[in-house]
Image 1: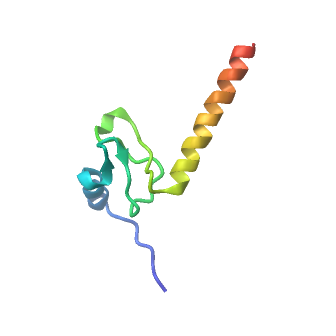
Image 2: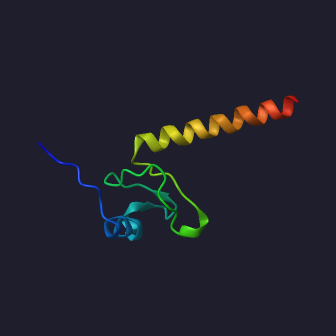
Length: 77
């Protein structure tokens, strides 16, 4: 039986600062990091998507669809 241990803040920082976890320096890809929206490389600019997490990709697609539907609805008013 395995116990899931939540990563420490230091581990999150190490993952975030590791250049191997950033594809083309803009796409975050880390299978060990289960966060859906980790911070961007420059943290004060917001969050990015962890492309190694399927829930992140589904959330991104849902967000894009929601924005599209809302913009079509607003245009029709």
